[in-house]
Length: 394
Image 1 (tube, helix red, strand yellow):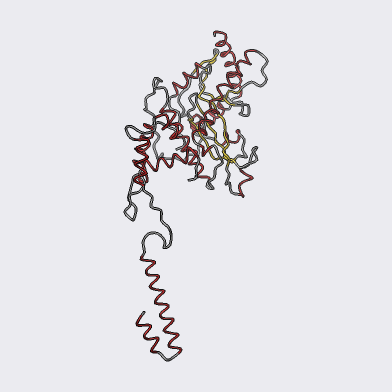
Image 2 (tube, rainbow, N blue to C red):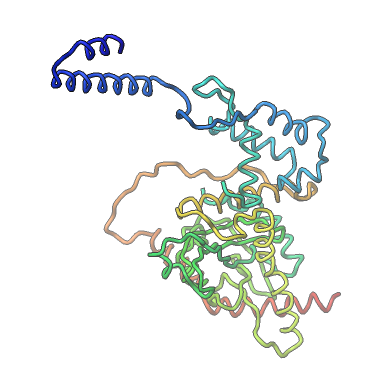
């Protein structure tokens, strides 16, 4: 720049002065661009808050995860929604599955957040609702049936119902499609819950304008049964044999052989007793919805995300954590089944045939059996007599 100033002072021509001035300004601009592109780190002029990640991790570990933590186990469960042992199981599984949860250094060489801090932040979002494969099927069918038989419902697999999750940031163009009886956009969760509030079937994402029957038509709840891959089921009620399990449902569900509904305005004493017991046991799924929302406020309050796929991931994550907590806190004296299950290959060769196949015929017959109204009425009548006989023995 000093040399350029000397040239400007020695020049007598106005044109030369203007050209040299422009050249000097361009040279200065190029120097600034080079300085800005060679810079690494934060933007010039921006204030940087130096967060002490290591000290934060030490406090978190000392408060909750050390051998003698500050907060006892009951406060840990209250804040993290699970026991410390289950939390560590999740930590090891996440570190093995996703490198994001492994503590690493950033580009500046600074040590980042630990897996404990990342998991705590994620659970805080799920549990408190702060800004920021489908659910596993219930495996212990034998124990489930045994418990439900003691409750007076042999062959019962659980209770079914739907829950609406308000979608606050639903796109304007979709609001009509997602608005139902609540007059606000919602997404629907169909779930089946057992007596211990384990959610072993979940189907989420249909617009709130649908009713429970529309959701059922789209659901995969009877896929295993229709394809002949459901566990075998054989039981007798009041002298009649049955080969399919059933779910307790409210009045909107159809009269299928796989649903047992209550009796509206019963007059006889035995039917009144049946309606009272059925409605009490059917509350299992409603209790499961209440516990799920109590544990994870993010699914209790309005959904603030724009992307439907993100909401689907959040709901699945909350249900999986809910089931893990239920399993972790289940009675250890309960009957446990072997973990030897039939495996389905990842890729199945497909053979195209124009002839009617036995599989298709069996599939159609299975759907006819699922929707059989006569079996529905017979099963309900048998359960009325069965519960009345149990009531008389008390």
